[in-house]
Length: 239
Image 1 (cartoon, rainbow, N blue to C red):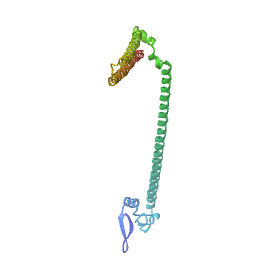
Image 2 (cartoon, rainbow, N blue to C red):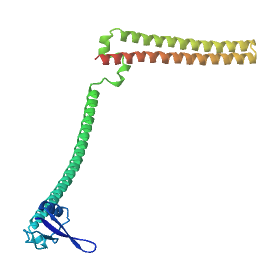
Image 3 (tube, rainbow, N blue to C red):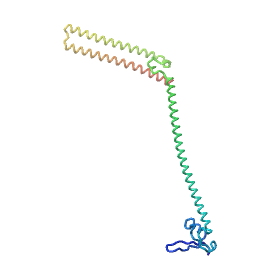
Image 4 (tube, rainbow, N blue to C red):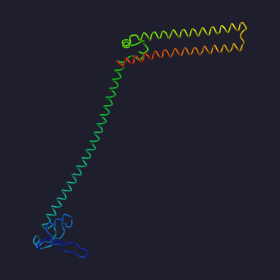
């Protein structure tokens, strides 16, 4: 029977395996069961002599197999290198992207800040003076409310006159009260205790009246100023 044989080392002695077709011998070479120093034999290929595999026609299969193994190893090495370079490029690209994103964000923040500054400067140039509400009325307010400024001015005059009259009446009340006490005391119609009570009553009434009139004056002017501010805000909003 034609086929390949090879010797297999055992525990006690070597024994022969075969006959095997060349395809099976190639498989044994590919899995490492047969090396270049393994002893093989073939009735035709080796003239029935036992020779090392490297001196048999099977050595070409052995070389081709190991050459393919080397090519595969080199291909795997190149693939690993390519993957490593690809990962490095991705990492570098991610870093560059983050860097560009930071630059873009900083540029946007700077542009927004400059825009706010320009808007603030423009508003400062075109805005009305802060104390404009203390004037009778602005020009556009006069146009929108032609009689309101006159009414407010009249109201201010009335507040001044009314509170002036009230302060005068209070002054007269205190003076007359003091004069009355002095006369009563000079005529002997007023005891010391009763005179003290009247004096305290006149003083307390005068103080309370004074602060009431002063508070009314403050509230009146504050209300008038509030009306001016509201009108100016409404006019500026409409504009």
